[in-house]
Image (cartoon, rainbow, N blue to C red; front, side, top):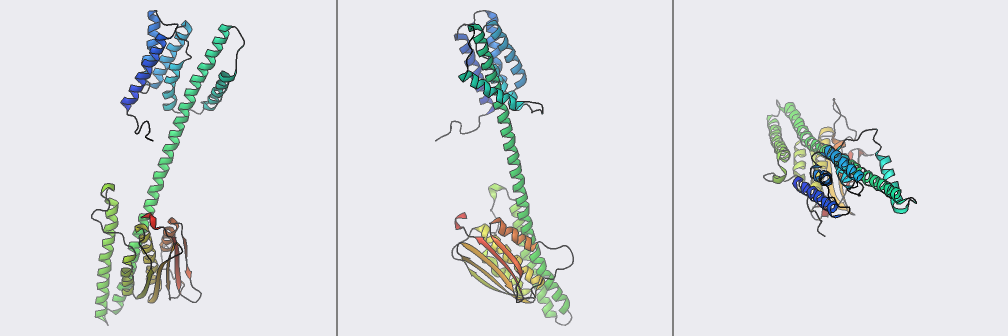
Length: 381
């Protein structure tokens, strides 16, 4: 069903509605007995209705004018309606005025509900004049209290929605910063680890085997160029506007790029056996997560266990994607001096983002294993 207002009303349209409401109420007051005939009555009706057109621009002054004119008109018997125009003018005051600590909004709401019950089920057994006065007071309290309570409730609801939107935006920014930090860490850590290993090899064999040192320098050159390409891709994503996202950028690395990881690790002295058994395509984000997990795990092998042999297994089993990286190194990681790295933490965060399971630790017979189980949902394309 098409909504009544498919878009928010513009300020001019809202003012037009207020003008129509004021004119309509003025028409009702004119044609309804007792019917104003004296010029002062016409002036009071105009003061009660015409300022309503500016109630959104000057809420408090308009309410004061309309309320004063309404009370005067009721006292003189010009109208019998219980402050309907004043209640209509009071709503933007409650909606825009900042709430004070001493303000009894809850009590006003309770009294309004009691007035509603009294108007619906109560009765006054008294003289007609007293009964009319009591009814006027009850209905006036109901109109004004209801308008104030609704205005305050809408204001609190909007403030709550604004706070939730702000918190959601802050959460999204934090998540994006963590994602970027993980990507930067994976690219920089993997590349610098390989460059560091090959640089050490080149320095060690430069005098005795210059050809091997030259080969190490070639690996450093290739690895650094690949790292620069990935960094440009990442920075290009950050700089690209949403409307032009993906234009002119290379695709994010996925399962097809795992042989490149194995090749670079082999250049650093770690032989990687790839075993990828995935039937069908995977979502791009999931492929990127798998690639980064394997890349970081293999980088840790290069950093802590080289020269070693490493086995990478990626397969789908029972609706889950299994990623396992094992090596035959010493098992116990010897951390370099300085602050601890974030490789294991980053892999754990990637797996947690998909609601999967992650484990990393030494094996009983030697070696180290990283295992991740990710829920497999191919309809997330």
